[in-house]
Length: 116
Length: 114
Image 1: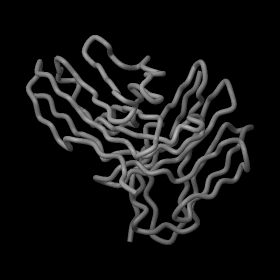
Image 2 (image 1 turned 45 degrees about the vertical axis):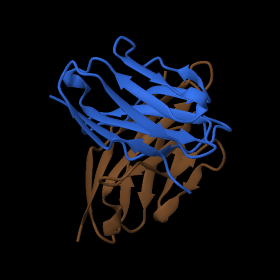
Image 3 (image 1 turned 90 degrees about the vertical axis):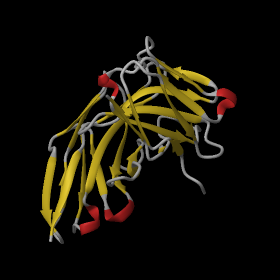
């Protein structure tokens, strides 16, 4: 079974430039998560989708961050414009969605963003 | 409100000795609790989870954790450390619903001495 796929694995951009990350969850998983992980810290949830619906985006900085999950499968996370403080690893995870409170999440390898 | 505290940022043990990684949580409701492991350059992987069934939970690779409501703890243990256990470990508390939350601890780095 293929795992969660993320691309690119690494991205280096200059501040004020836009950037986008892509995630393909495990086939059949209804719930998709985007996390931000700063160095030496635990992941922080940015947004959670159940199918196409963003059911929790309370931690997403909406002035510069946006996300979409068209057709309830793949998802894209965008930052525009990027700031120096956005340098971090962006993780995508998916879960079956039968019971999100107890579901196991399956994580992708992450995208490491460096903003210069 | 929910929170999770991993009491040690770094734990170092000798190979073959017991491992104890400590986690305390705070939750207004009955939480679900998880331990995830992150090996270098690999994705986070579930070790084990507590979801209101048995309080002693067994996971992969010989790890187990005990949910102690009176102590609000969910410590991770392993009787005998192996070199391959060297990684970052995260304790996670979650609760979904009208006020859904999932919170990761800050992590504990486990080092294994030969």
